[in-house]
Length: 251
Image (tube, rainbow, N blue to C red; front, side, top):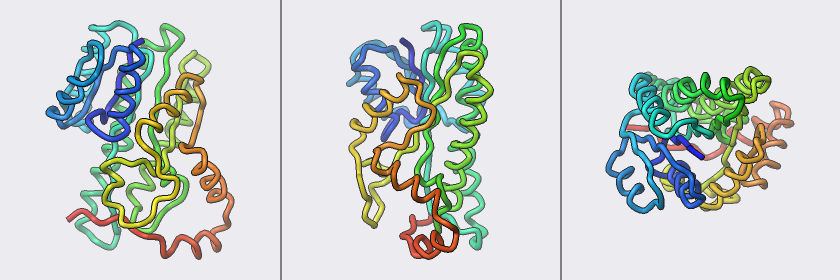
């Protein structure tokens, strides 16, 4: 089985790469930090290919996807895992560039990651596209307008795509992680309930992908929190969330 993963140089992407490589699959791994991809490649069993590029570069990403398909044949699973996070405030005009970076990386690059594979998957009548969202996309969080909105967009985009492709045999799976111990969460100065190790996340995510689960929050405890968050009326959610801790802004 062939698996294509973006954001593979660290965090969730690297954990998923280790999981699928250990299971004997052939991987195409994408990330900006080529040195980290090379280090990861050295530790993985099997033969795999790395592509050092910025996922915001749609042309380069498409070229990598085509090259991988030409090399390995049909690709079974595509995981759009590249993502960035930073605190943002709309009142700060300098944060507009951060908004743009987050949306380009988290949302538009997800579209660009899937695009090259869809025609071949439809032709075969099989394949799985996986979008990595976040519990932060369930409801808006103060100081995280860009990140929350981007992950909400991923959830809704993947749902639309699922409805488009399901009749043609292609599955779309959305995974919304809670707190996972990665570089992205390392600088959080607040408590992180149900904090999960990345390899445990990868194992759970891969099981959901194999079952073609349409949507899953990981870990399951955060799934309960997410359901409660959806049901809270605005007045109560506002009272609970307005003083929530905030991610630091990029300076």
